[in-house]
Amino acid sequence: MNEYNQSANDWRGVIRRNNRNSVIVIGIFILMYVALGLLVDTFIYSQRYFQAPLGPIFHQIITLKLFPYATLISTFIAIISLWIVFIFHDKIMLLGTEYHEITPESAANLQEKQFYNIIEEMKVAAGLRFMPRVFIIEADYMNAFASGYSEKSAMVAITRGLLEKLDRDEIQAVMAHEISHVRHMDIKLTLMASILSNIMLVAIDVLFWNAYFSGSRRREGSGGSWLVLVIIVLRYVLPLVNMMLMLFLSRTREYMADAGCVELTRNNEPLARALLKIEGDTQANVEDYTKQYNQSTHDSLRRESYIYDPSMAGIGTHNAMSEWFSTHPSLENRLAALGYKPKK
Amino acid sequence: MSLFVILALVLLVVAFTIMTYNTLIAMIEAVRNNQKQIDIQLDRRFKVFESLIEVVKKYMDYEKSTLKDVTALRAQAQTAKASGDIAGQMAAENKISGVVSGLNLVFENYPDLKANQNAMELQEEIVSTENKLAFAKQAFNDSIETYNARKKMFFTAFVVAGFKSKLDFDYPYWQLASADEVKQKEDYTVKL
Image (cartoon, rainbow over all chains, first blue to last red):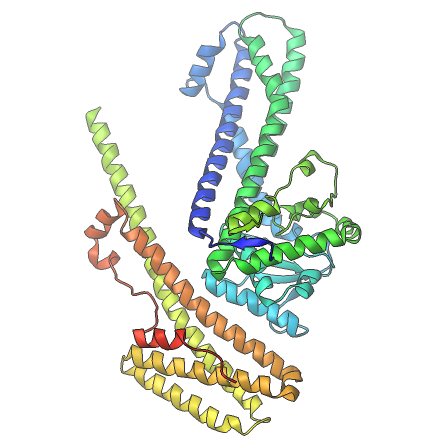
């Protein structure tokens, strides 16, 4: 902590900037989704009228003279799957961990009671109309996460390790970060983006194999060949673009939650201290914590809403491509956004 | 065609007016609720501290006068509130805060008491209660900020001008009542 210069944090500015970034990302996602739907439609109609050039077909679809079935159907699928996921989401968040719920009556000791008080205080500060459900996860590693976006499903969870090792102010900062996630509806947003992205990937895959087989059957010259080329390129570029967008969105929301923490507590120091402590502690116990993180299955579900991404300390649970990049900004960048720059 | 354009424009203006109106109403109610939230927290604090003093009574004689003080101050606050004297009410509530910080010091002076689990729990209760009160005031000021900023924005200001009695309120921010009070709190140091 002493190695950093402290300065004030402009949380209003940070929130405004990152909010704008999120709107841009979500806008790009929706545009991509519609564009892909239209591409599928163009492909289907070009199969049916394979003498006609592509330009007029596309124009007819845009002006609704040819009905864009695929675009509408895929939008419908997206809405249905979003709805289903929103219903079941809070039930899967705690999957694979050993946890118990805290209420004012069930708090076993002063520490747990204090933890509950802290969340109540943050609820008052945020002006929430509901009290989120509070959970403690029985694990030594230091982490916390929030989930939900409505009165029914809002919840915050903290690991025993974090509760033991941080002081009151630091826990308050961590919880303010989590409550900010709930308040900014980050869970809803990232879920929506990831569902759109997954449907897009399935659609482009189906389209690819369709084009592959129909292409080998017929060999007509017209515009069909460059449409196939576009599909081939998209099949390899789209997953990459989607992943970059998702990561950018997730990091944007992290910055916003950090700024939201300063908004609620009007103090940037405890969060900076807590982050440094968590990082130090995780690095000191990498081996032990790797084991524990791996024991709790379905960890990838929680990763995006953790306060601290364990893969930053080299704890990876899977070897998926997304592990190469972190869902969170680096500690240094987060501290800088909070107003802490390392002394030279 | 031109008729269509005009119709579209009118529709746009009406839609904007309705949306702005509804948002502002929601904001006004949020401010009002947050204002009452301060009262809720004040009330909660009184109840919590009353029961706190009941427990502490077993340990010291100090508390008998304290309890009397708090009860008297509470009565003072109530009558001030009933007569609409906000400043008087705030002054009495602030004095309760002073008594309570005295209590906190008493805890420090009795190691035996400090080690006691009940006392520690009650101390946590004091901290949390005072925090909740402060956060309620903060939330109140924050909601006034959002409302005021929106109200004065370009275009929105026109809608507000159209429905002045419904949408235009002037809520003062919560703050210390006088310059003397600010000075007194600024200069405050802990004396043991």
